[in-house]
Amino acid sequence: MAESASGVAGTGRLRGKAAVVTGAAKGIGRATAELFAREGARLVVTDVDEAGLVSLRERLAGAEVEAVVGDVSVVEDAGRMIRTSVERFGRIDILVANAGVIPLNNIVDAKPEDWDHVMAVDGRGMFLTCKYAVEAMLQSGGGSIVCLSSISGMAGQKEQSTYGPAKFVATGITKHLAVEWAERGIRVNAVAPGTIQTEALAPIPESYKAPMKAAHPIGRFGEPSEVANAILFLASDEASFITGAILPVDGGYLAQ
Image (cartoon, rainbow, N blue to C red):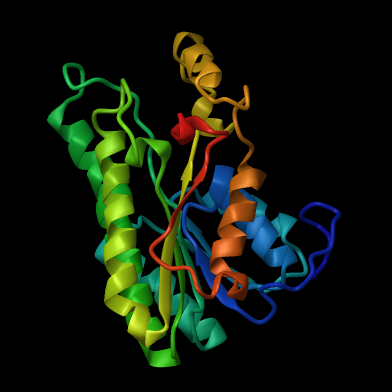
């Protein structure tokens, strides 16, 4: 693998593995795609942001990468994301179900359509991509799925009336699929990030961000690369006896 993504060569922990990363154009998804590429994975990267995917592909020069522009909440798009890996690489070994939206609202201000939108992307989208990945993995002898939950999917928070419940869906999908498919060689785990320094954080008011930063015992927000490292571990064969786990990557937030 070329060192284009960071200047640091990987150790080949995913060499030869075929991986699909949804929501890969920015933030945690982009950091994960870059790390996977350095570790030797053959990648399908997906997002609704076509320009972001073009930029990512340029950054991953030297890796085997296919880009799919699509919406995980749309049946045809979600199916195409998984089929692209099977058609290009002959299989799918890893799915990182990362695509999501992060609205900030209380239940009084939230509109019914806000609920529908976040549940469509964060909930239905995760269900669809996991469904099609499991179907493909059953044909090739197993695989590893890593879902993106959140501290908001593990504990209650203010201003999370739509996003938080959607992340509880992610936690639930992870646990139920892990039990359902363990005997067929499919592991399903999740990471639960704390507040991460991504593009989505930028427009959030400082009046919300300051107390959130203080609520993380480490005293800062996380970096996308720190979440990507946890995803890599769960996706890799190093985690071969781990399934159904929700791994906090949260600077100690949930330990309180």
